Image (cartoon, rainbow, N blue to C red; front, side, top):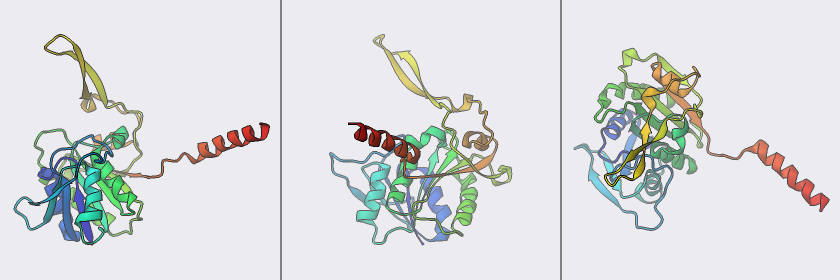
Length: 259
């Protein structure tokens, strides 16, 4: 199995090394990541400047790795269309420092890289770690990631698969299990905080209120992750609201008949 690894934290983040090590037993791993951190850049692609890929020495390993001066979505596109000789069988993005939950799916570069992979009809997985510590010990959760992949890869993943996985920052013995969860779309994690700049003008900064949030829905991704579970949320590419499509179609059929 050919596995493409990418992320949004940059080619030399500890999370991508942990991920590559967890995936090596399952096949041939190639790494294509941004040359610097590109967090919360969503699904942006580079249109008005050239995109370059440079081969790099990946943490003194023998793994083939490239640093791209673009976004996570650029990395996946470049890997498939330019860099790799063979199309990957699966794409895995991460391990992100910090969880990706609820509304984060619209902002996260980690998740957008997985979505880009699925747009090429390649099963894709985003995986994140539930800690905001500056230098987390990813080796603690490497066995968790390995066991999740071991289960997933025993089954045939459809080409349009996008899975959003979050790992609790716990040892294997402390984890309660795996929960397949919905996204808690009603949770407002990031909120603006006002402050005065040195010239006395008011400016605003997005503040992460994750640690202060209270969760009512015990089945949601937020609740289960905080309760000590690995969470997996299947996402879908097609955002068409089919019920609304049919409804609006009837509105305009009626308008045409009456005119």
